[in-house]
Length: 386
Image (cartoon, rainbow, N blue to C red; front, side, top):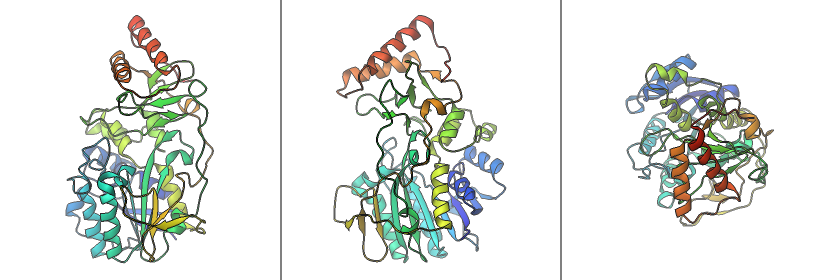
């Protein structure tokens, strides 16, 4: 089945681009960020609306509503105000539009921290709303590494349907949890230089999740340590590729905002390849896998996978790797020079790491100290990823 899509909170079009690659068509895009809107208007020849709150109705032909609704109030990197927060609470606008026009399908995307924050209240509010409207629903946390991209990006994909079983989309595939691909010094590793006390954001042969920016709105791309000891941050164009977009997909944003704003757009985007996987399964549903299940009971958080298709809410034991596409190593993936991690950033991370009690891979801190010494001796230089 080919779907007619209304894209709400469209960002730079990750969901819509991925679904288009699976054969579906978007007829409406709604986004209020000027920089993101500039990208959408350049990359899609589609009707555009600038504020979901003033959108009165969906196009009549809509069969699928998609929304990567704002995560700032749900993210560990944000204010964690929860589903009632001014930004993330906008998901209520999706429900308003669905109440007026019961589209056959709804697909939502957000951060997995929503499953923990306030004992999963955000997911409870969303699930309850769709249950009230008569929808069957399923959700699953999926890691974008499953689609071959070296970025550890875990996201919740929630699919609700009035007409079919959403499990035939989200639970028709299962590759099982995957082992780490090497270790420090044998492969490139990623970490967040803005951390060091409470967490490391460590990723082997991958980078940790690209973020929209710091709490102050400052771009903060993750750092990469190559096997030869090089320490740097990826080029913005490689960050776009790590999200599944072509190089310079976000360049139109520079017509209305600074270049640095593109990091926020990339960090807030939905993985194109994950959306394409969902889109292909929506076009051709599969058999539901044999997943262990159990009734949901009150807990401190919601599980990483669950469904309610009429028999009550069930927790599901499913991996975050529904498929295992050919994996691109991080070092081989990068095609642009790394920017050396600055002296200030390196020194700040080392200071936090030495005060904290985190356990690091052997030789990691020594590698950073060598990098810091080299920066102080020679000043910043660009380095080419091998």
